[in-house]
Length: 240
Image (cartoon, rainbow, N blue to C red):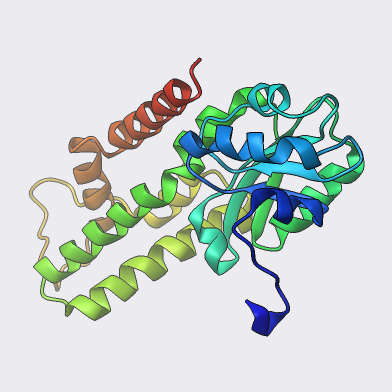
């Protein structure tokens, strides 16, 4: 860290005493100890105290810091490591517009960022916070499908990952609903009794066959349930 001009310390109070912004990036169970350590050096003037800890509410932060402390709660996700994060934040009662702009600048450096009401945070956790894990499973499964059909593993994994990334970019940049984009890829399937051989001129609709298989195996329901269950766990963690 010294090589890039950053000081380091194991002392929370020392770290906060010379900081304009504090980011609490520890497990939720450790937050009470950190807040206790910060109490003597936090004032309404500085520093801004932010947290990325799961389930730690604004009320908890404010109740364990001096009156009128400026706090912001953040929910990022791991693709921030490649500057493609999806982050949201909510401000505490005494956070200023300047604090909000500072938070936006910090988070926009590693992806997209939105301010939301705190009531959205648990659902955000279940969707974008945990979401990369769902997508990794989807990429792995797609790659396994390619391997099953004879593709080399490295090529299959590369094609699966690039396909997911490209599809996501299509949604974000075209503004079209995912259902519309899906329909644009799906050709009509061949009618029963028509020749499906390679030389047939009848549309075979291979994409819609794949979509039908996903529907038959409950893909949408599985994703919806994943977001639901992760959200419920976030709610339980915050003690609501």
